Length: 158
Image 1 (cartoon, one colour):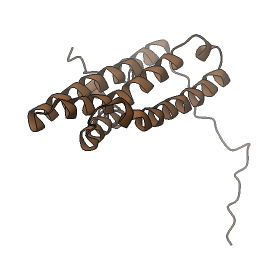
Image 2: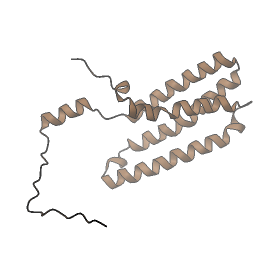
Image 3: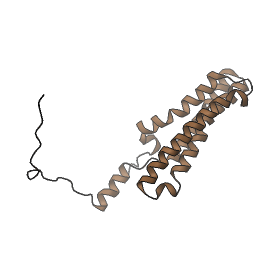
């Protein structure tokens, strides 16, 4: 097996240069942070759009309630997650932020699973396809937010 030889530490030059305040401001302007609340808001809007689409397609209010419940099974836990991440405790230090992220992610997953298990008891005449449509569409907002950041933060032409 071929071994890679380590370079001499004396010959390695450090090419890292910290950003100036102007460069950092320009970088933040070009790549703003994605707000978790904005993602939750878009999830709510898309959940309502799915419910309207289900109403147009099926005409059954039970299917509409199922689609809304499917969307809520994503939106309610995501709201709790966003609230947990934006609390003061999560910003104390890095380790608290990492612990908070994992804690609230587990709460989000657990609440989503619990809501899905409770769906047949809470929604009369549950339509599984409609509920899954609401669930899947609102859940895919996370990937849309990562892939199409300009949708969430339009670039100012000036």
